[in-house]
Amino acid sequence: MQRTVICAAVSSSGVRHRIGMLSRVKHFADSRGYRVVMLWGVTSGVSFCKFEELFSPIPGVTVWNATDDEIHELKHHMPSSEYVNIGGKSLKVFRSGQVPKEDIFSWDLRCASALLRGIPGPMPLIAMTPSIHLRNQAASFAQRHKIAQRLGIRIRVEEILRRDRKPHRVKRELDAVVRSLIRIPWYVRVFVATDSEYLQQMIASHFADTVYLPKQFDLQESTGRYIHRQDKHAMFTFLMEVECLCQCRKVVNIGGFINEHTVLEKTIAEPYKEVIDMHLHRL
Image 1 (cartoon, rainbow, N blue to C red):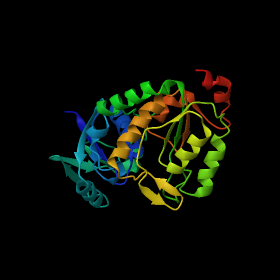
Image 2: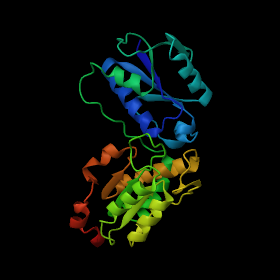
Image 3: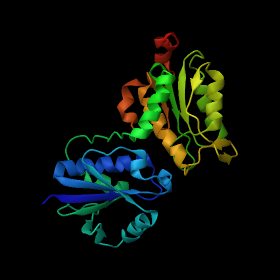
């Protein structure tokens, strides 16, 4: 009988965190003949969205939605429990340094990374497919605005100062991003995906032809207004933005987004010489 590995992440984990964890667990499972089940926490980290509201099924992975209370209960057991019961199945709690030999439960990114020790070959990152409803909405927007002929600009603003991902919600860091981007000629047609109203407005004031998906910046802070992380509609919009970014001719990626690994060959960085040389305004 095929063995099973079930994985779950902390409640606050966002989509990128969960994909990174799942990619590690699946690489281990594919190498060792395990079946993969992911507990998808319907928690604040993903704006309390169920998996199927956001994504299409992942080949080779079974996903079960789990409540915030269920995820917290699992976290409570992690320090001392040897086994946990999930879905009527008893699983050994995997600890770093152990050799998996039975059905196991892997908790969060650290355990997922530990599972990879001794597994040969590079770990492929899973590319997530948004739900058909979100894909259809993104396709309509992309066709209407000729997204495939535009430069995509993604800026994710970090809200927690101790994290090293920039820019933070700090005025000098936001302005540094603006100064960098205005090196790109004003005539380049762009698509913007950011969670900062200030950055969206500043970029739109520089480029003559800027498009973006409509959204509500309803979180007021000292440096402007931002997307509220627990807004479900903002999460839906983000996944449509990802679909559009992946269609853009070139992409400027500041702060990251899911599926970014699928567009590495067209991702560019300062001084953005590729955009100037391509004369995107002539497309």
